[in-house]
Amino acid sequence: MGDSIAFEAAAAARRLSSIPLLSVLDAASLAALETELERVNVPGGQTLFVENEVADALYVVMVGCLGVMVRGSDGHDSLIARIHSGETVGEMALLDGGLRSATVKALRDTQLLRLHKRAYERLVDRHPRSMLSLVSLLVRRLRNTTHHIGGQAPVRAVALVPLGYDSNHHGIARDLANRMADDGQQAVLLDCKSAACTTDWFNAAEAGSDLVLYCAEATDSAWTALCLRQSDRVLLVASPGSSLTPPKWLLGQIDHTRQPVDLVLAHDACQDARQAAGRWRERLSFDLVCHIRRGNSSDVARLIRLLRGKAVSLVLSAGGARGFAHLGVVRALREAHIPIDLIGGCSMGAVVGAAMAQEWDDAELKERLRHAFARSNPINDYTLPFLALTKGQKVARRLEENFGSIRIEDLWRPFFCVSTNLSAGTLAVHRDGPLVPALRASISIPGLLPPVMMAGDAHVDGAVMNWLPVDVMGAKRGPVIAVDVASDRALVPFGESNGRLSVWQFLRQRRKIPPIVDLLVRAGTVSSDSLGRAARERADILFKPPLEAVDLLDWQACDHAIEAGYRHAIEKLELLDKSMLRAPW
Image (cartoon, rainbow, N blue to C red; front, side, top):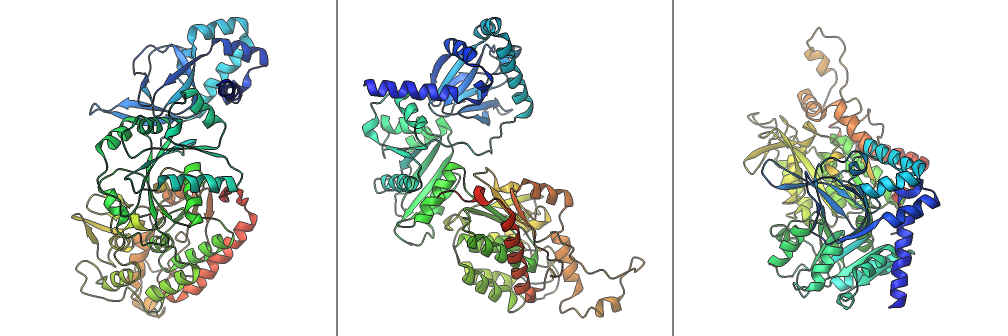
């Protein structure tokens, strides 16, 4: 018991001295502040303070996570921000008092330090210079820092909850801990044997390790409730053959504490994932599906990166035949041993991204896509243009030949694509459901290919609204790589025409396809310059191969486009600091 108390005390001292907010204080001021701080433990799901209460104290999060809630017009609270370890909440209490502007709840078991306004005023009298420096820092943080709910949370504790007695969540936890240990990281694995430990002990265990893995039970036990309260993120673990009836108590617990939730499907070796995740999606609300195949170390490493905020996301733009340049960039990334964990795309970028999520290697990726698009024109099944110039049957057939009936959530890696919902006038994001209809919608250039009807709405090419959907990647779990193959000049100039283009000017180009097709393709993918700039600025790394020489529908130029993408990526990677893209896992 003595060792445990000493362990907890030492860990608490380290946490206090490491808080960035307190780094501006000298030793004497910090010692005086320690005597005024009160330690507060808030169980997960409990309220710290409510909107319109008198603001009388500042709080520093030592361990855990708080959620900032605001009441909507419908009378329900909405989570708008998260306050993580080392951050503060209630700063205005020290500055001007007043009323609380929002409600704050503990999203998990959270340990806080509370500084009352009266205590702060006493410290100002004794250490005015240090305390004013502290206030100045608070003001700067209020002015310059905005909490984003979509931002990556610093995950320190994870609850693994089995969705059945056949779910090997202990095995998944051991694989995670062993992989981290191989790379010099410490993960602590806890099960129900630790149920009698104190909250301080759990907090100290978290402070003394890189990740704490709580193995919950398949029942509504006190230990399972503690695991859920103590975690930053919840992993629901199931096997493809698990019962598809999640217990009601689990749904209630997750909704109560509001942690982010992912689904982990544990497969035997390379067992086909088809249809496994889709059935769970109908019954549960979760963010990502993470497929873990037994004996596949890459799957385990990917899950660690997702949890630790080191996952690499790849977003591929639209671009027609220029989309073959994506293959060259992907090849260069693989040769540089840069992992790709999450994938999103638009139009041709969606097709390439889905192939990557299927884990086709470079040779298979090139051969399949060349066969589907380059060996014969996929968009020459012309028809009377009631809906479009072509029937779209060749495109649909080739997508089905390559992707079959698989669902998006059953792909080995998380994937999304975008289309434009013409009926609603909005961008549609496809993260689940049948893959082929989503891809067909994402590449259906309006006027050239017929729209795809989904739930009664007409969907066309996503490039109409967002040809490089970096923003759609959502909650950033690490660096984002974007590949832009669409923004280079795309139409050949025909010279001056006084507002009209001569037929002979078109014929002299000797094009193999009607010129109207080029115009439709460009009109369907041009989007806006401002949107493109914003998307490129959001990316941590941008690849933009020189592709002006490749026409949007020149499928025969696929090899040139692939080589251009590869050479550009190789040259840029040589100049980049790749450490941010290479986690130890």
